[in-house]
Length: 441
Ligand code: ADP
Ligand code: ASP
Ligand code: MG
Image 1 (tube, rainbow, N blue to C red):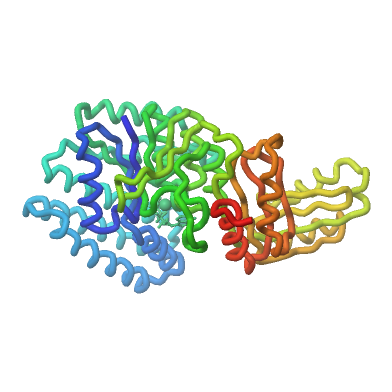
Image 2: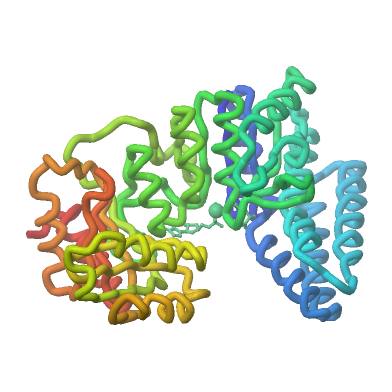
């Protein structure tokens, strides 16, 4: 069986839901389908929670009423039989009254998580009802009965494997099994989620749990591109990526795939295919464990990066210096993205600056500290085994006119990263595209 995930853009309107339904049923094959909330809904739910944290019930009411109007208008567009329309109206009425039941004092994270879960609960209910109206043998599997995280907020693979398979077996013979992306229960059994964009992760985890033949991630563009199509002209879809390449790209900002999504698929060696809902016959991008020797696959960029440099003559020939530096970051639970060292100094980049002041304060014990804000990591991804020749110079040639703050290579066989100013990002991405993919010399 294949696992297919459709994102918020793919189920963003009744029309799109009908398209998705056609897409998943036309070949008659059995499928497990993971859906996101309709696009925009999770953002609205976040907004409701923000109002409720601040005790602003009128603000929450406003957002809920806007959502309510939008969803009720979808009912007659999606369903044509009166009894199905009545059923969905009743379901939506319950959901919106439920959302209004959180106008309480002491609104906490626990309630917030319940609110955030409603988008996927609603979209999956709608699509399942539509499929049934079309005479398809479809059933809704409740993700909250099998998607579970452990005490470290990591997916509990043993639990998920056991219960996802039990759920599937408990309703045999269906053509389409629908379930919610993103939502889960945590170690305490409370409703939780896999972080924003986490539906991709659900699909990958479930693909591994049920030993799927393939995991398909359907979104609104034609697979992973060799550069960010929102920033650069003339990008091309990449037809094939190694798991490691896809993970680097996802982490470094190619938002088409959530970074966590690669790991479960890779561990279970299940190919992941990225496909375009708007153009279903396009080949998309296949991600698996096959290498394409010597090929530079793509470029991606990550903004809002801060660089921290510590220079100290005490570092010269001393041991234990890096340990002390890393412990500071560990204390403040801040992860380091890039790192470059010389005999007298070390530069690191971080994207979470919540504890920057404390970190810099502590690092000053060890040397002179310089901080650069508004930086950007640009990473070039491909088969960059160190014995391959020439890829470093091609990337550096492209960046000849751009000031580069850090360069990192050797951490993986698949990536060379550059830290530049955010204001140089567009030029850097464009030049990398021109030099690496469009034949400029
Ligand atoms: P989905 O609901 O399908 O997961 P999201 O709502 O998560 O989609 O939004 C992802 C959006 O971001 C898509 O519309 C996609 O086109 C766009 N996008 C963002 N960054 C990139 C990138 N680097 N390459 C391609 N598309 C991108
Ligand atoms: N609906 C969730 C979000 O918007 C999860 C997802 O779409 O992947 O983040
Ligand atoms: Mg997404």
